[in-house]
Amino acid sequence: MLRFAVIIVVSIAVIVAVSACSTLSIINGLTPSDTYVATTNIKYGTDPRERLDVYQPQPAAGLKAPRDGYPVVVFFYGGTWNSGERKDYRFVGEALASQGIVVVIADYRLYPQVRYPEFLKDCARAVAWARREAPNYGGNTARLYIMGHSSGAYNAAMLALDPRWLKAEGVAISDLAGWLGLAGPYDFLPITNVEAQPVFFHPNYPAGSQPISYASKVAPRTFLGAAATDALVNPERNTKQLAEKLSAAGVPVTLKIYPRVSHTTLIGAFARPLRSIEPVLKDVVKFVGEDIAAQ
Image 1 (tube, rainbow, N blue to C red):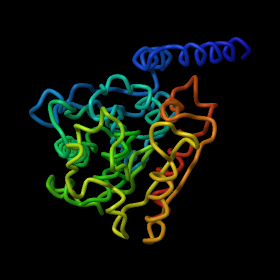
Image 2: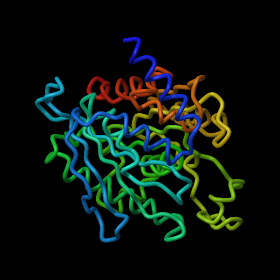
Image 3: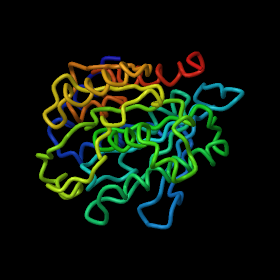
């Protein structure tokens, strides 16, 4: 036990000291591979970026498959809409699959290949794929969620709140059992982040690009999490404000503000060496597990 604790401390120290890319490599290097079954590089569209990976719970890990299938979470990573690879988030797939959730992690087209709203169309296609195909991986599409971190949480929010994107792929917001946003930008005009500015045609922002504008009673059950102090995405303006607006509209909202994480370690807390920082994974799994009782 002591040796394991030392490994965790050393791992955290190293992770803090290295770049983001190296950090993800280290985290994934410490992620077990015997808690899930992965099916990778699945096409959900024609573009090379329209690919996804599926993580299924591994029954041998001690999980008993529900008679009606596992809940399904489609996860979109962040990266200011200009970077990111699904393979870097294996630790998220493992974390959720090890808790009895079928996980779909999708790539989507990024800037400069595309700008808003093209990446939302990709994300909607990935969700439509999951709704069609998840039963082939042990999933229950009546328990379908979308989830994202940072700019990926923006994508998830737009799909969950603005019906245009899913409708174009034959899916309705009412088909979702819920959605989860971690450290997402939901109300961010005017854009001060120079990397994000060209994605949204700064300063000529397209109308209707802010998730906060679509907070209404038709939204599905919502989980919103954020770091108490976030230098990249203001949790007061974004997470808390969206939670208030959705709650006022009568939407069931779970709001979690975590004092011991940053913008990046909020999602990093899914990794085994970092889970003791904050119970982000535990809270997410609890929210997903409560869907049957909420119906």
